[in-house]
Image (cartoon, rainbow over all chains, first blue to last red):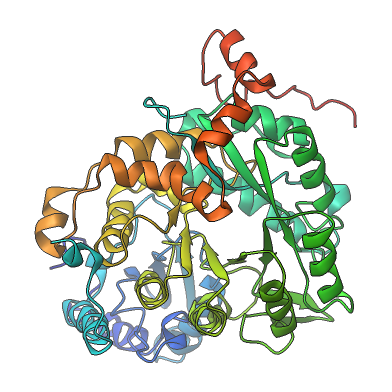
Length: 137
Length: 358
C-alpha cells in the first residue's frame, strides 16, 4: 500500500481539469519501462508528485526514480504536449522534484507492483531456478 | 583492511580528469558537473569534496593516497575509460592507470578500456593482454560518434571480435558500464540483456556489470541466477548503503536470496567519490527484519560482508589473499598508515590545495 502523498491512478479531484490532466498523465509511459515487455505509465509508476492548476497555467511536479535519470526531458516534452492540448490550458510547466523526497517501489500502484513481482517469480520458476538461500536450507 | 585482517579490495578506481582543457564535446562540462553532483547525492556531507579538490586532473599519487591512506582499501583495480568521444584523454586515461600500477605493483590491478569501433581494436586487446598484462577489458555500451549515439552492447557485431579475442587470450574478465544512462543514448543500451547473451555464448569469460542496483535489478538478478559467470559490481551504488539504506538493503536482499554473496564486488569509484563511507556502511549494515519477513531475504552475515568487501575481488583476479598480504606488508603505504595521527585520514586531507603544478 502506498504511504506517500503523490498522485495515484485512483485519486479523485473535485476540479474537472485536474481529472483530465491525470488521465493524460496515465498515457505518458516511462521511457525505461518501454524497453521491457511491460510498459508502465508515469502515473502508475508513482512519478507524479503533484498537479497544480492556476487559471490556465498548469504546474506538474515529477519525482524521478533516480535523480540521475537523463530521460526527464523526454517525459516532460510528452506531458507538455498532451496537457497543453486540453481545453482551458494555456501553458504547462513540468518540474523535477528535488525536495529530497525519494522514489521507492511503494509509490507504484499496488496492481502494477504485484503484477511485476509475479512476472519475475514466474520467470524464475519456469526456468527452474532455485534461490541460493533455499539451496542451503 | 577489516578488523579481522580481511583485505579490502576495491574493484573499480579511476583517475578522472575534470579540467576544461580535457573537454572535447559541448556536453563534457555537464558530464563533469553531474559526476560532482554524484558526491552530493551519494556521500555524507563530511565526505563531499570541495570544488577545488574535485575539478582537477587527478594524479596517480592522489588516487593512491585517497585509497590507501583515507580508506581501508588495500588493493584496487584501475579501470581506464573509453570516453574520448567527450574527453581528450578518455576521461580516465590508460596512461595514468599504467603509471599507478607501476608505482604500486602489489596493490593495483588494471582493466584497460577498448573502443570496439577503432580499426585496430582487436590488436589493442592482444597488445594490452600480452604486453601489458592487464587483468580485464573495460567496455561502454554506447558511443557518440558522427552525431549519433551508437550501440556497443555486447551482442553487437562490432563487439564480437573483442570478446572472441578476450576469450582466446589469457584474460578472464570483461567489465561493462550499465544502469546509469548518459547523454541521449537509448535506455535499452543500459539494460543487461546483452550481458546475458554474451555470458551464455562465452562461458569461459566473466562478465562484470558495473553500477548494479541503480536500475533493472530484477533483470540483473535473472542474468546472475541464470549464468554463474556474471558478477555484480557495486561501483557508486554501494554508497546507497548510507544515503538510501532501505533501497540498498533490498538490492542486497535480492542478491543474497537469489545468488548469494560470492559474485558481488565492492567498488569505490574513486576519485569521483570518497571510498571510505560505503566500506563502513556495508560492514555495519543489517538486513531489516521486516524485509526478511516480507521477502524471505536472508540476514547479511559477516562472511557475506567479507566476501563483498574483499575476498570476491581477489578471487576474480585469481590472487591469493595471503600472498597479497605478504606483498604489501611493510610497504610504503603500510608505513605511511602507521605514521598518520588518525587512520583512515580525514576525507580529502591528503590532497594538496590548490593542486600541484603538473
